[in-house]
Length: 281
Ligand code: NAD
Image 1 (spheres, helix red, strand yellow):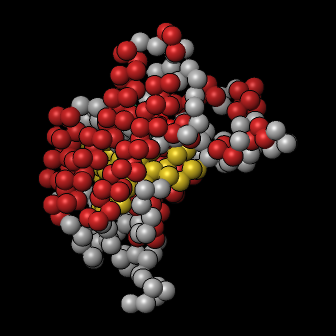
Image 2: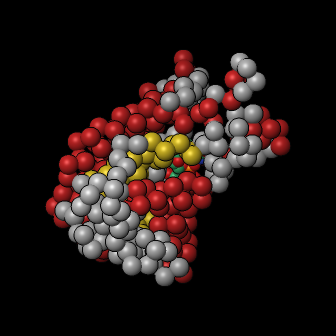
């Protein structure tokens, strides 16, 4: 085939369901961005595992919404920072769904403190969930991708991993050094995995949200004063919605992005464009 010939973008027969016959797992999928990703992957035709660590009723609500769209879904509990719980979750997924094609490493949290007051517990908890959790889930997903290999009727890749990063993989964040360090770590975890695994047809990318309206950052948007302060940081002049992230995740999971690996897509309304310099600096 000549270099400029166009390859079929997706192996799915229905372009509205580009993830038909694929199995996806979204961590922290009973709230916010993870919930939106799980719903969007389901709408794109994937069978979805809705991972949660607390509030099973919220996970079952998301499962019900995915089933209403005509896709399979199950809820599985696991704390992503615990190796044995992650391994049990993947074993259960493979038992129920047969395999995994898409992992969305989304679970994350903040435990903020001034630097001199930050406890080791706060540091370790945030690194444990946001960074080690992504390592543990990615490792089990990659083991299954390698075991199964490429199935051309399903996807051109053996597997796709999408890491939920943050603009704070590049923007330093005082008062949140554990969080910014975890996301800086996610950047190198993602890129190093992408480099190592590309020859095996495993794609690894990140989505880096700016300010998205979810429970994690409620104090930044739930009063008019807070929102006005926040919008000074966003050239697009609006706070993001979870669906802004979910749409990008579905595209990264699909064959439409088959030649993309090792990339961070910033979905941030321009937050990383140094808006303070817009008027000359
Ligand atoms: P959220 O609080 O609504 O969702 C976080 C999810 O992670 C919840 O479902 C929570 O239960 C889950 N979780 C936490 N600890 C867990 C654990 N140990 N095991 C399994 N699940 C766990 O917040 P969100 O905004 O939807 O955050 C989702 C991701 O997006 C996080 O990684 C966050 O860092 C990232 N992010 C969010 C924003 C934003 O503005 N909202 C910006 C940048 C990055």
